[in-house]
Image (cartoon, rainbow, N blue to C red):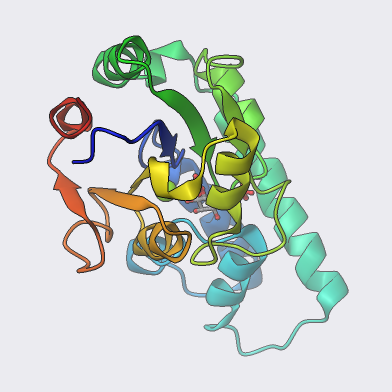
Length: 215
Ligand code: B16
Ligand code: MG
């Protein structure tokens, strides 16, 4: 890996912490109320995808067509349930491996940022005890184009003041790896459908493996 890399941009859900079970429970509650089939396989398609795009995937199984107004109300309903579930998170949901690796990367001189599709990013970072840890945060509130569009990562790089080619992105979603490559960044895959998707520059076996690739 290039020694000249200056910054690391982390996806949040599926990389820094794991909120997918809460996304699943909240979408499941909505889908059940609407009588729409929803399972873990469909839930996997929602990784890294925006809230409204996630809803469209869920509504693929609906026999009824809904208006834009109804869809916005459904997304809001899901988000209310999701935030109630997120309130259960605490600093115990941040793995020691993740925190120790972040600290070591910072000690090695890298700037650290978050690039997440989630509009709940700041709330989640507060819950896990990292409200002010990162040098920059780009999230769902900053962007109009969701991953695989590179906007969220380009925004993070711009907030850091680092050119995209000198940023590595860590992602668990193939859409995120596509976004990193579209932004001209080094793409590091960790688990999920990012791993082995064919577009990544490296596959990380574990979060701590970052220390092998980022000297
Ligand atoms: P919200 P990431 C993404 O976060 C999640 O992976 C995805 O499942 C979710 O739909 C999206 O955030 C939007 O989240 O409803 O909280 O705005 O993986 O990009 O950190
Ligand atoms: Mg993710």
